Image 1: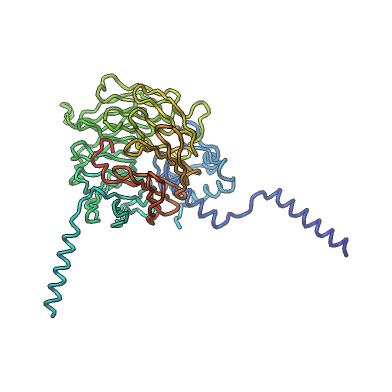
Image 2: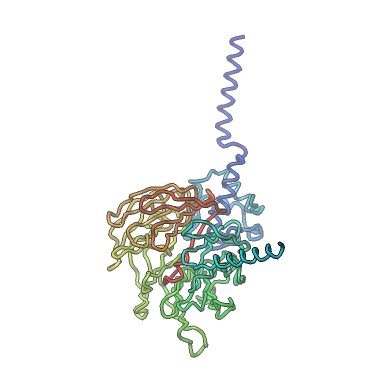
Length: 113
Length: 393
């Protein structure tokens, strides 16, 4: 009984560790984080791309404007920035998953809460 | 009895009428960027007097005042130009003049309001009274006649507007005191190859020097408006992002550049430093390490202190620099996302907006105590009416 319990625990621990390694980031962003990211998108991205994403110093990022642009290019631009322009790299501040969320939100259209 | 009541009511109304007669010298406007509204504030009583809705997209909005300091011209991101009567708290006139704009200026005589636009790139000039279009100046450049985004628009003495072309790397002067014989329009003087990607501009408080910050390369472009024939020169070759090209999470603003008698204080681009320059020979004399990448670097009206706010993500802080010691003497935490600061006309107080904290905090600039806070919806720019009488604001 004691042995069996220990074995189960070990399995659980192993499983937990394994999961942690594979899924370094949680599957979904917390509601709070999404609110923060929405704010970041509207206010901080918005300071160059416009709060309605219709553009400013930076180009328009509305679903319409992005229609024929590759998601991968947009994702890489947000991650690494765009040399020769003021667009900074966000990969030091945001996780991959958060950047993916921003890309998806841009293609769907930003909704203010 | 009824008659007595109506008489009483009328007297009360009349008395109220008397009380409402007031000046505008201690008034101002705070932009609420997310809700497309502004609040009119009183800097003596430190209260909000009115909230005005319906001004459109106010991300990156700015304000200039009519010379009687009664009307605030609010420039919105969506190309909206709104003339607000701050005494009645009403919109006098509102037009959508372009697809995308960045700022504006009012002429020396107060009769013209100019707006700098991204789309279509150029400057439009309006009658300050009626907001009717007086002149359209497309920022056309290059062989294929592209239109450049226009930034750093300011008024200059001699009924001139000066601005920079972001995509073209040019500075233009539009002189409204002289009509060009050929075109019948304001005389335009173009300065080409002033540097890559000028991102903002400012004019010194005396109206003599126009300075454009460059994003695409290091250094600043300077134009002596007393001697425009001498052309645009480059100063501070080391100023900029340098070889490493540090990422910049918010473009610094130049409008608030702090000028004291001997020094100019300005934000380094992409570095956690405020730079100090000798105003007489434009040489850099010191770098002051600060909390983050500076956005606004503003001198108290008496020049004794310089207040600095910072770019995302270090934007919950304000620091105060002593202009004699050239060192930080105070660090304040007004709340998340500090966007702007505005001094009362003689500088005894400063109003600080914290966007995400949803408030404006009023500080005593001598002892740094918070005197009061005013709740606002995502406040950004704060503009007091003493700007009405300052060159370049």
